[in-house]
Image 1 (cartoon, helix red, strand yellow):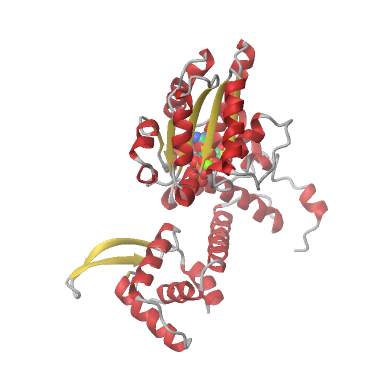
Image 2 (image 1 turned 45 degrees about the vertical axis):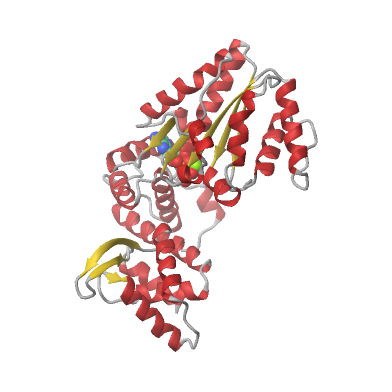
Length: 390
Ligand SMILES: Nc1ncnc2c1ncn2[C@@H]1O[C@H](COP(=O)(O)OP(=O)(O)OP(=O)(O)O)[C@@H](O)[C@H]1O
Ligand SMILES: [Mg+2]
C-alpha cells in the first residue's frame, strides 16, 4: 500500500497517540504505585514546613515508573508550596548526560538561576562548588534535587557528589534546606557508595518492583482509553501485550511502545482494527529492531560470539561450547581470537543487555559449574539478526 500523509492524518485509529509516549500517565493516575507514592509523600512532606527531609534512594528495574512518579510528585510539591507561600525549588538532572560532580552541579545551578548565564562546560570544579554554595547561603528556600540514573555518575566518577550534597546541610551558613533523591535501575548502587555516603542515602529506600501481567493490563487500559478511537482494539489485545511484556521484564514503557507500534502497523497496512495477529507482528518487528540496533554497537569479536551463540542448534548452550564455536568462527574469519576470560565477560555483558538469557548450572560432562545460555527470541527474529551478522 502506498502510504500518504493524508491517510495518516485522516486515520480513524488514534485519538491521541502522544498519550502512549508521554512520561506521565493521563491525569497523573499511577496504577499500582500507591505504596511508593505514599512513602515518597511521607518522606518529602517536611519540605513543605521547611523542615529537614531525608535523602532518598529510589530503585527499580526499567519502566517501572520511577522517573514519571518522581517528576509528578516534584510538580505537586511545587504547586502546594506556591499555594502555601513556602519557598520551594525542584531540580531534575539526568546523570547519563551529566556524569561528573561539576557537570551535575552546573545543571543544578542552571535550573536554580536560569537568568544567570552559566556555561555548559569549561568551568572548573571549585568555581562551580563556590557558586552553588553561594546560592545556598543567599537563598532561604527548600530545594529538592532529583538525580536520575545516578549509577552513570557513580560508575564514571565516584560518589563525591553525593557526599558533598549530604554534608552541605551541616554548614551553619547554608540557608537552603536541601533534600536529594537518587534514582537508579542498577541494583549495585549501594556497592558504589562509600560507607560515609551509604549512611545518608541508605536509610530511606523506595523500591519499584516490576509489573506483572494484571498490572500492565491496568496501565495499558488507562492509556488506550485516551489514545485509541472506540472499538479499534480487538478483545484480548491489551491482555496479550501485557502478558508478553510481563514475561520479558514487566516494563510499562515497552508495553506502551508495543501498543503504539500496533496502532502504527494498522495504519500502515490500511487495516481498521488492532487484532491479536497485529500484536504478534508488531512485537516481532520491535524485538528485531531493538536487537539490530544493539548489534550495530558491538565490536567484531562480540559479533562473532553472538553469531556463534545464535547459530547453536541446541536449545541451551554453555559458555564452553560458545567459546569453541567462537574459536572456529575466528578461524574462518582469519582473525586471532580473544582469551576465554574476555569471552566470559562478553557473555555477562550480553546477559545484562538481554541479548541472551543465562544462569549458572552444573555441566555433568565437564563435572563443574558453567553458564547455561538460551536465546530469548523467536526463530524469525534470530534469523533476521543472523542474516545481518553474517
Ligand atoms: N504505575 C504506572 N501507571 C501508569 N503509567 C506508568 C506506571 N508506571 C510506569 N508508567 C509509564 O511507563 C513509562 C516508563 O516510566 P518511567 O520512565 O518512569 O520508568 P523508569 O522506572 O524511570 O524506567 P528507567 O529505569 O528505564 O528510567 C512512562 O510512560 C510511565 O508513565
Ligand atoms: Mg527513568
